Image (cartoon, rainbow, N blue to C red; front, top):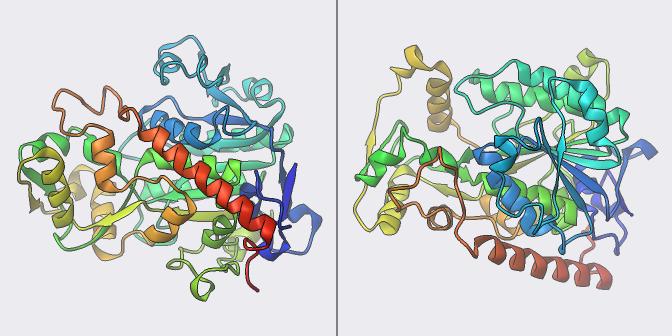
Length: 421
């Protein structure tokens, strides 16, 4: 069993590398025993919301670093019907090859969650509803039921696939609801919010990809305005790194406390990236009447302007692609959240640090890596059919994380992994 203080990473022992990263990222201010989160090296991890397109991608990423043979953790995949279509859509051989157990549980029926959570030490929650253009209010209800059941079962950590841009003030309902869910979960169980930038998978959808394959990238932000991107696969990879202890010191480096302050880290000037949006404020904690144990990590695997994306599209497709900036105002009448997202990406954008994320989570995909790994140029493939990564992609990521884990362990043993004061 590994444990670290939830305060400054200076509280970590030099040898507590394996399985300690989640604890490093999960607690809040130092000073009490309840700020300590312990994750057994052989714990059971429940995976929630992984049967959809992006969920299956996240599962592939998680298995590269936290699957059987890489750690001693047991992985449980939650689904309403273990014999249904959603469970059958999981990657082939997930049970036989990876040993992942599919368990029954329904987020709308909380009495079913207790058995699924029995013996579970950590939860990775990728999604609480189907992909949609507007926020589903049921997500908040499901989040509360899951968090309460997790607390009752003795779960020590929740890792939640959230969104960047907290506190941005653009009124984007989907993003704001994810941030409220962070608070709901953190009120019950120590929570790490893995805050995504824009999913690369969005460009696979039918309203963008067909035009790009014909040479026209219709996008509403300026050609020279960088957009931060992350593959959904790498949300799972990040969770897997936290579970397995890969890069535990930098995990603490990218995390923010519930008050928004940054932890002391052994990187340049003690700050590896741009300041993340404030997580939970003291006022919000007072309003809820509960202490929220929340840390957040903003995840971005690449940063490109639409013009630069076109260059990558052209390289992968073998034909020129041009950016055509579409006006955003029609979306005010058609899909107001899309209009607000366009404004957000144009005026502010996500604020993760790509270099820091890639250093912390080895194997994260660049945009070009993602297009090639998902066989973007094959016209017959579609988002609706599911995004399957080319053979060798996950193996390469696993090799990268294994090498990093070995280096981290060696550094910790020699004192090289100890953060500077």
